[in-house]
Length: 510
Image (cartoon, rainbow, N blue to C red; front, top):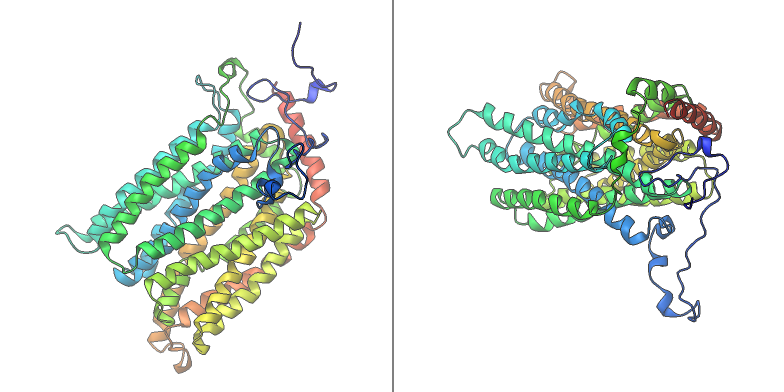
């Protein structure tokens, strides 16, 4: 009988969708593909190309760079949706449409309702058995449809909110809430299953680099979308905004469809396989390893600290520093550029063996300097200092996100990758939603107290509400450092124990 030879330790080897043995973390790295062509000197200009690209070392023979970059397009649409929901629409509804900040913050945080289900989505995509032979693609595709639906409803909600109708205001607000909920839920589902698909396609030794590339593409999508929206919305008009949103819905469908084309191999034999472990069993095995409770607590605290400002930065620039719509939209691009720089530095440090928790801790330290700069920008009246603070917020958030994601990835192997990514994403999304909602409520409440004189004549400035939230974020960053400190230096031991536990769980179900 001919066929592909099996490894010696076949009892612990998991097969992928095509029946090929999956690579393990203990396997030797695959040989690197040379960027030079035979017969061409290494110094020739014709060899300057793919190898010079950022994260080019993420490519492997199993997952070439072209295919990986095409798959990463789903992250571009996620970044585009984030810019619209958190950046542009946030500013427009508060400043141009005059909605209270707490109403807008509540709408933006509505995807919080779906956030805990990211763990379930990840687990279900791990064990999904489809007659079509796919595991991840159905979840990515339905997430894309939900994103499209939310963006398609949004223009009509804005028309109602602008007062160009005779209907009651509650209809416009309910329509906008539904649009935010659909777009946010689709974003969560697409990102969770997409990251899991990427880790399925990549060999085990390259998965951290692949995830880093996907995070980088999220930043690229955010920067490109923010800059494009800034150009398209200058000068600003309601009609231009509606056209931008409708165009974004179409682009989302096209890019995600192209990203998924022939990525996941179809294996119709999966429908005959024994069902995988239940969610409760997989989750119990995951939480028993690597001090998962403290790790998730640190992720939650840090995410809250970096996310409370999401709904406030652009209104802060518009109301306090008197920046235009185009200028405040560009701030989102600066935030993303800072995030890209932090992500790149984190990837470089982690590739050299740095501890992921230490990288995340340095991100929290950068956040302390960032929010200090943002706070002092108001009394100094310096848009430049404010822009520097915004870039530092993105830089610190990039370091923190990459460090915690790498640590989470090391806690799960084999068929539990989706669960690990879902847990990280669920905690992060849940914390971000709570932070965004509480940031808007606290800002409005404290600003109202300050305007009425209840906080004293010194604090009657319009910037008081914003400053109070930024001070709370500073305190949360200190709490994050306290939570993450004991984890530093424990990632290797946690990875070993987690791998053993999850391997035993997977083996007991086969």
